[in-house]
Length: 243
Image (cartoon, rainbow, N blue to C red; front, side):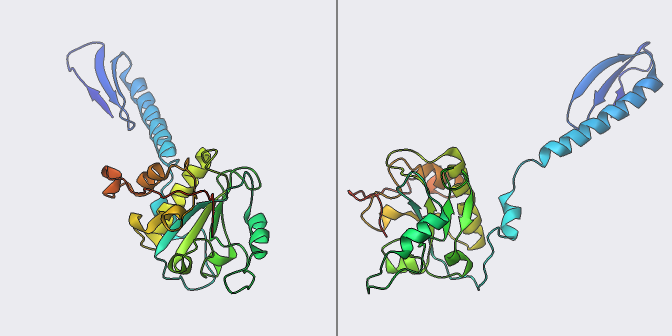
């Protein structure tokens, strides 16, 4: 937008206001040429402004079409339980093969991987990638917490890594925060329904270096805990993991 500051001044004084909020004070001798140039400048600034604004992710829009579809009617989820793999590398397939060799309390083999989601660390899976498992796709119970209600109605999330020794990668932290946001919106779960494994069973999982407070505050920024109340005081034991 072009505004003239004086009617009797030669050369004329103008202020150019762009759509990007930039203010320029200019001395103009050729008003017609300057007017044409200012319109071109404003149009370019408007295009640049729109281009920059589309780069920011919006999980609210993403949650409308949940990125990990299911083949069955959604289960009545009540919890989310966070784990680490307690290994330096891994993938959905490697955990699936390991869990298939395990037996339940009645001596029956597990169906396979006990988690619903796995987040990679760059060793076996792409760093920060989120893969859903057959349990999520079929909306069936988990085998990850050592607790009947938390297995039956708890979404198990496993991050590859041993967080007793090293912290999760920045991409893993961003990925689990994103996943918690989407799950909480889509399935109407609250912050207090998200637990580290050691809140349920005597174990170190998901590890002393897992930044639970930071992740919870980022995933649930409007909760009372995010405003100063500690949300997750874990019990510890010698075990690094357990199901």
